[in-house]
Amino acid sequence: MIQRKQTLFLLAAFIMTVACLCLQVGTIVGDMSSVKVFNLWIVNEDGQHEFTPWYLFALLMLSSLVSLTTIFLYTKRKLQAQFCLIDMLLLILWYVMLAVLPQTTGGSIEPEWPAVLPATSIIACFLARKGILADEKLVRSLDRIR
Image (cartoon, rainbow, N blue to C red):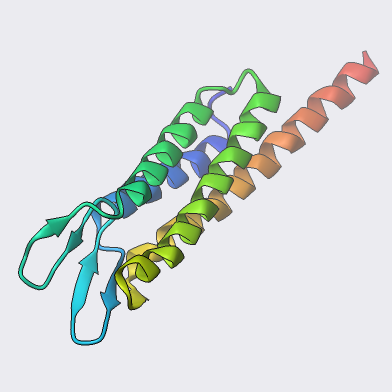
């Protein structure tokens, strides 16, 4: 059934990753300059856009597609649990890439509040996976009774 608590967790993870896609993630502060970091581009002090962090956008877009697809895999619980794990790994990889980004521009990053949204998505995916595995365990135990 699609009306499970796992669906709500996966929907929340999807909404949070899409929200993070649209908002400013942080600011890179260098020697004498600071640039705004979004998931798809960096805005320089003079207002020009550089598409250096496109991989952040790609990871979050892929993660949001995986969490949206996972919602509709409710008939295949094992595959749904694996997709939750893949989604969590993509979001962890997003944080790794965000940490590496200032090294390419030479500075340090000061994160904004939207940088917390992928972490809450990881928690939501973890809770969804836990619920999916509990459902699978329940179904297996009922199969043994028959």
